[in-house]
Image (cartoon, rainbow, N blue to C red; front, side, top):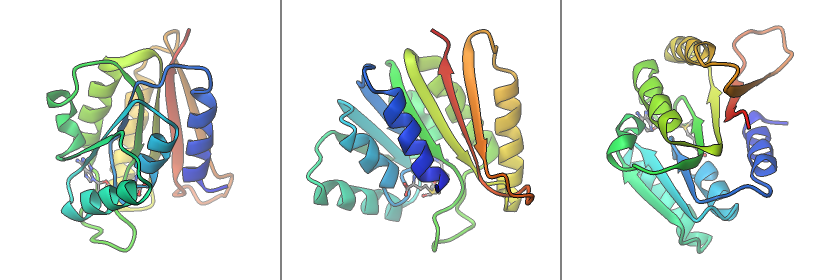
Length: 183
Ligand SMILES: C[S@@+](CC[C@H](N)C(=O)[O-])C[C@H]1O[C@@H](n2cnc3c(N)ncnc32)[C@H](O)[C@@H]1O
């Protein structure tokens, strides 16, 4: 199963019977995750991306699906705290660059960690953060390492951290991480 689909399945399972007020898509891209969160019936989804094309594509997808619980903001996810000052139930980050687009426009370690810290600071008690990292390209290698260090410093008596990766011997396949608070 593709990691993006696995991420959706795990998010869906996690939120069965749990509050779904606010979800964040930290990297809208082509809008697949935003649409997924909107269909999961969070009350509100706030999506971030730095590219005009990504915001446009995501808005089109949301409009076509006649979903009306989504707000898109064209800014970096590192600015999340300027737009959200309440509890976040779910945050999804599919890091990296848009497939078939300009590969130089990619998420980078420093701003990704700022965004993760912002989300963590507002994460609701029943919340979940989902991240897909791509160590197969130069910036992604650095970013993956930073995300791993960020996860490593989380207190394991407070947070449940899961990791999914292919069993393929190639160590540059994508990795899915999820973080939730221990109840
Ligand atoms: C792998 S794509 C996301 C795919 C998307 N979640 C989907 O479902 O189609 C990564 C996206 O991150 C965006 N991005 C790069 N730096 C960013 C930043 N600092 N803040 C928000 N988005 C960023 C890129 O523009 C790109 O659209």
